[in-house]
Length: 470
Ligand code: HEM
Image 1 (cartoon, rainbow, N blue to C red):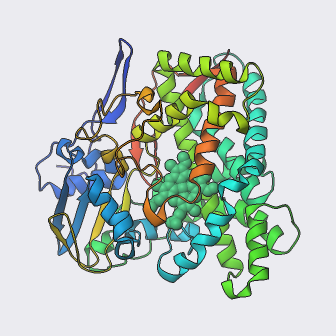
Image 2: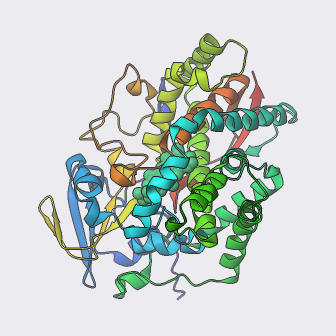
Image 3: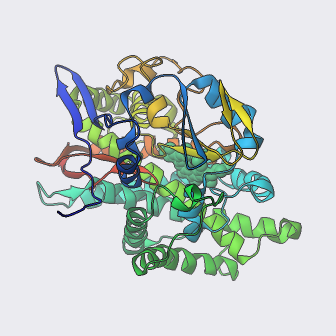
């Protein structure tokens, strides 16, 4: 008899018809409660496949094994408790997240904590601040209009991967904002491919934590992992070095960081720290917006009534001239599509934290070093909070309606809220409007869409689409 450690992924639920679209999601897990091996094997590849239907409801629950405690929080008030009220006790990322990203990001803001995070957070928030949006929006508009030209030259019915296309688009935008440089499609493609391969190689879980190491242990650097890291870092390092050696003064984010350090040497940002922060902003800002745009195309392609409302709004607000930053506040429906996309497919579907000290969340006593997970995926589909939780209904975000506090957190919340929230939201709305004005996007016949959560939530095998000029 052959013993295999492979487990079949869950089936996908996806329904459409009569003006209703329920987009792809995995069937809830139904295995026995203590089938830890199966759950472990599934979670390594995709967290979403171990959620049971009960996990979607409002509750704080826990699992214990090998002396370790995993607490899952799916109640808005308790989400507030963890992310805001007791931030000091829960600010630290889970060992799995820290270990998964440390080779790429070093001590960059996304995975740092304690004094390093406290010192760098105001610095990074300042250089990506919304007051700088007019400068960044110039890059967003220019790069998207280049893509319009490229798509116009595609032979009819060419099948392309929307995830790779959106990855290239957002890589060029964020590269120009962070490095002030045009990295060009080849280097952008290299970064996107490197990060895709990196994601497929790192585990969602760090087994060493379960074996008693509170901080997990570093990942094994296999030749494939080394190569994936090298592909990303080679591009980022080359551009960063130009700045660090004083060859670029262009008002880019890295340029500002270098100047802040020169003015305030007590910040102690050495060469590596500057490069790590630049790489962090690049990675945090590229992958998330690319995934959001990709999911938005998938949703619109399957909801023609929503696509028509979007086209009508763009025409009413902009006529035939390309949308710009000034139009963004008027593109209310477009914003609603993006907000609903972030509800259904939050690019960071699981926020993992580690308790410093003992604490109490709801009625559960939390042990030091316990892992706390808050899943925007579960929270955003909680039937106790949302009506039609699995359906695509952008209209719910119209007319100034706002969700229950701490029930909608695609950018997290509290002191560690996404530093690039305004950048990311504006970029997604603007790119979507510019492209949707000129094209409709259709999912290629026969393509199956399977959402899979590794570091970010993306369609597992990309999103094959055809592009049609309007
Ligand atoms: C749709 C787009 C985006 C989404 C959904 C998103 C989401 C998030 C989330 C959920 C976190 C917190 C993760 C955690 O607590 O574990 C985060 C952190 C962060 N994001 Fe974003 N992000 C987006 C775009 C951006 C952009 C465009 C930038 C930069 C220009 C950026 C920079 C950062 C940084 C630096 C952090 C770390 C903040 C800290 O730990 O203090 N993000 N983002």
